[in-house]
Length: 366
Image (cartoon, rainbow, N blue to C red):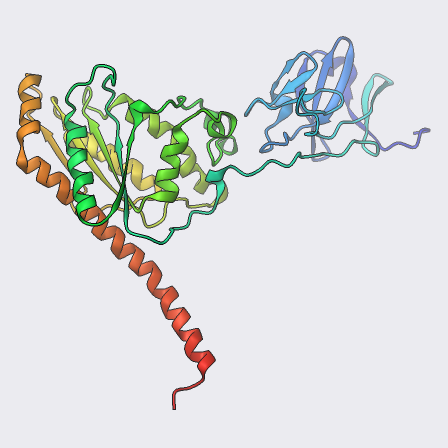
């Protein structure tokens, strides 16, 4: 070309003008090509966030909205939306010549990623020194303004009390007291769109699922999840949480990063209906996928069966049962015992290695 540019042919301008926004691939490179108000705009296809395909997003005025996490970049300049202009993706000079849409690669603007402090959850999981730590997770959905007796909560309280008596630190998380958004299906867009930390957590500081993530990934050595049985399954809050935990498992799929190592899980299952083993099976399968390990006899449960839905009687049985209360305490102890064994096993090689280095430094024994 006479102007000395490095012009790349993206295709017939007439065809490209038929679609407001599209991804165009030429020569092994991807571009986000837009057409609005009879003008073309071309920017790099990869979003600054986690590489979402901008050309597969949508136009919001002159801004392209990434289909993965809704970051926005000007369709012609590549600048971030107002307030985020420092985040910029490459943009390309454009011209139409001989009915073809051409871009100048030589004069592309530079990508600029504004420095963003990493989220606290993004730190490398590492057990901090100290006593064993057990997190109890309540998934009952009872109304905290009009409290009622909850069998699963009642037994979880006994488990935490037994853990404290055994010298462990404990933490209680009630899902019903946390304000957290439901999973918004980023994984359904692309595996890499489901990030760790969770995309919702990154975008919404008010989302309190962060507390569950921190307890599971960073704080606890063992967890006990307590749930009522609802229509033969765990509570609706349990599944709402489980969907948001997909990002923990997906970190293995996308980055081979195991966030849950040598942590123990146990379960408390209480219901007026039956299907204890079905509920337990789902929970065991799901938490195994996250990386948790289970003690022998990993759950305790109670149900008087499908035909006995006299809830007042069911509640009274759980409230007064010393056997169930004792079982919850023993479950906590089993979880902590296994956690202690796993911690000791991990620390032993490090201690041996440290001892070996020390002996080597001192020289051979006379």
